[in-house]
Length: 215
Image (tube, rainbow, N blue to C red; front, side, top):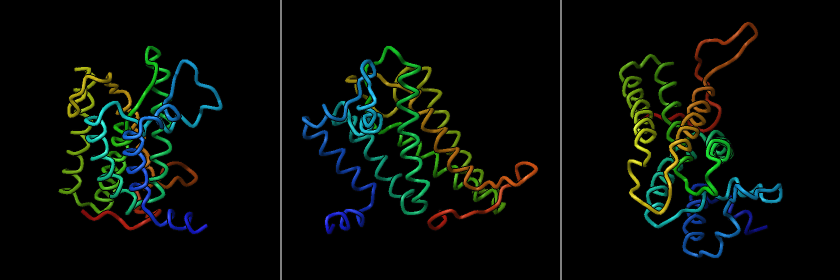
């Protein structure tokens, strides 16, 4: 019970980051966490989530983890419930998307899709807040960030490679980033919408959890 209470006090982002590093350093864990799309069963369904914690190389891990720790710390501090929902939904949808649209792939690894989801969550939340506040200048710059993210994914899709991770040990899958981005953007934006009888209302400020992001 004491161990459980101690763990509950540790930020989820830190726990996941430590587990990712340990799992990569101790290769024997990878067999329990790897997903094999060719023989996936109900008993292996947990691998839909654990496969994101594995990486193909230290280079792959360091890039993904640097983004995850930064974005995860921001999101977990300011919007903990939406942060957890983004982790769960993006992990599930990315794995399902890769399995359905890339039947030639045998497995999947990496946090980059979830990283993109967290980036989308934060940018969508900040942009929605600035639009509500009619802070047009800030809204413009957050819109720029949004288009930069979308532009990155377009370039990766046509180039068939990752812009930042230069690693030949795996095949880049821009679809994972696209699914992650859409998931994060929807969770970040829809949290500011209310849906009364008669249709969608205009954007209204709603703080569902945590304190608002103010940068």
